[in-house]
Each structure stands twice: as structure tokens, then as C-alpha cells.
Image (cartoon, rainbow, N blue to C red):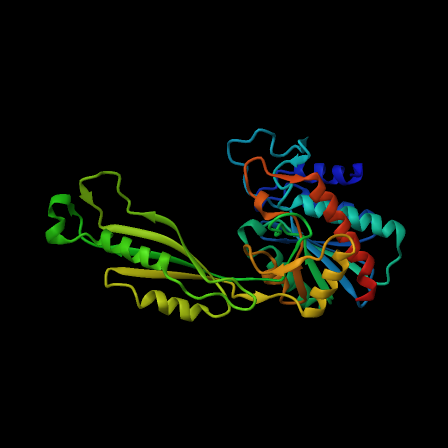
Length: 369
């Protein structure tokens, strides 16, 4: 592996860029890309720093996108989260996998590509520092800015951790929809010995949650796996054993495919609530396929020249592809998702090397797209 790639990742990991504070990482990327000849536009929306960088002004524009923010490093680390550590064939540090590692590989690929080529297409970057909370002042606002400027992007590769096993084996072409639900149940507060007479609404609430969590919504569709509901939190606000709380609540998330929509799911929930239970809904993105067949096939062919032919799919969580798809074809190509957000987050050195080669292959072949 080149010392240059290691230096980029070491520099990026050193920024304590916990969402939404970029801690100077956006300035670093702006300076790095400016030195390669990119025109850099820093975009500050509220408390979030973003960057749109573009090299030259051709009709064809290959964009790479990503985020520099990371989730907080909770207790239990064996290494300093914000100092790159090499051990056992791995590089440790917060963001090495999600997604400062993939971005470092992309920066190194672009740098090497420009030393040996004079492309007749533009290369651009969309970078943000609030992706981990999918905020309103990051990529979403950058896309609004690009729409106003009528900026044209031919296709975008989001350097997101998304592969189930190793780098380059998977192209994520879309995502399920997401619906958050807060359920609230109310009943009588009473001593446990009086529950038979006054009733225990918590028992009925548990039965309702069991029904939701075991319900089979569908068998999946052509591009998406089956719709899935998960109960993520249950609370009755009670720390004693001999009182039945008058209050119970639960948080639910449904990841749904294109056989459903928000209205259908919300009605499904409402029809099964009793008089003591209410539901509050938060909609977050419909299911989508983010790219045309031609762009996906181009990327498969380019990657296959450096690696085995990647599979395509829609598994995994939400990303800024949700916003980028509004202006161009977008897919995700990055590191193994299993290593994201964990204690002692890491990326295998071989995965990082492979990513640089894959991004280089995309650049090398884009003139034919």
C-alpha cells in the first residue's frame, strides 16, 4: 500500500468529526482537492459544513460523494479512536470503515489518475459532515444548491460502507423505505393486587407488540427483500414492582419494500390499535432504485476488470443516496458494512487497497460511458 494513501487516512482519522462537527475535515479536503486543480465551494448551512468540488467543466461529470462525520467512540476501545493504528493487517480508528477509509482510497485514486491522464470529463465531489444523523443541512442542502446552479452530474458513486463481505463485491443500487412509529398506551395506575378489577393495559400492549413483530408483511419483491418491522425500545416509566404504570410506550421501525407505501403501513398500524393506544408516525424515505441499468452495468464492467463481477442489491441502511438520486444516477460502492460503528472500528488493509483499485478502474473507463 502506498504511503500516500496511508497519510490521507491518518490525516482524516485525526479529525474528531463527530456529527455534525467536522473539526476541520472539510477544510482539509478542500485544500487537498484544490491542490489537484479542483474548484472548491464550501457550503455552510446552519451548523453543518459541506463541500462541492469540481475539476474542469465538461458536459460529462463523474461525481464521488461521502461524509466526513462519524458516530461517537463509546467506551471500550483498545486504540485511540482518532489516531490511525495499524495492527494484524488492519487499520484501526473511528471512521476507518465508515467512511474515511473509502474516501481516502477515492482521493488517492483520483490523485494517481490525474498524474497519468488528462481526462475529457469532469470529476466532482460532494462531501458533508451530518450524514450519520441524515440531517437537513448536509447533502440535502447541497443538492438544493446544485439544482439552483443547474449543475449537471452524469453519475455518482457514493463511497459508503455497504458490502456484506469484502470491498468491491457489491454495488448497492437502492434502499428500502423507512417508517418510524411511536406507540403510547394508557391505563389505570393501581396496586398489582387490584389489576384484575381495574385491568392491566401493559399486557395488551405487549400482545400488540408481539403481533407487529411477528407479522409477515410480504415475501419481498424483484429488487427488495421482505418488509421488516423491529421494536427498538419499550418503556413503562416504572422502577417498582407493585404498581402498574398508567403509561407504556414503544418505538418501532419498519423497513419496507415497494409493495408498500407510507399510507398503507400507517393504516395497517392504526386499524390494530385499541382505544387506549395511539400512534405517531415519522416518515423517512420511500423505497427507491437510484440508478439506471446502463450506469449499473458500466460500473459492473469497470470493477470486473480489477475484481470479480460485483453483485447488485438494495440491502443495508439509509444513506445520502436518498438525496443525490434527485439529480443523477447514484450507487454505493465501499467497504464491508459489518465493521461500521463498532468498538475498535477498522478496515482491512487489503480492502482499502482493493477500493483504490476499484475507484481507479471506474475513472479509467468513464471516458467510454
